[in-house]
Length: 122
Image (cartoon, rainbow, N blue to C red; front, side, top):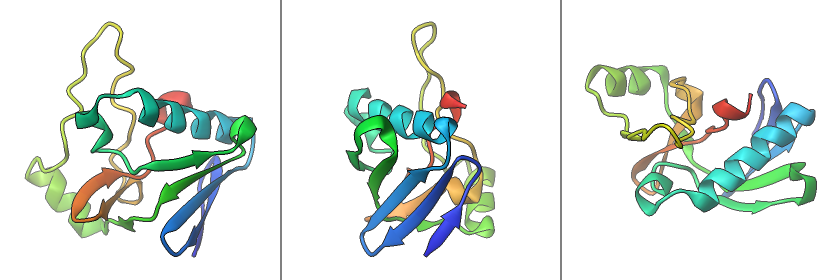
């Protein structure tokens, strides 16, 4: 499966999803996700789809493959307050790193995870 976003192209190869940067903005997004996944606490990391590897210069990142949400699944989570709480802690916190689009969330090993969490990098 191949998907094309604003800044990156995603290629899914079985259990691995590769996000290829399409520009400097895409590299910035890849770098942000890899850095965020590495530095957040365990509770927050559980909300993120795991970064398995980041190439030099962040041209590509490898993530675990998750099943994206459908529009209906996203709507139900939104209506029932089912999304995880990032619990922002200003002033040194980056804020929530994700958006609420169905394609940005998925199921991995029975839990809800953010698939795209580079919003602050844009």
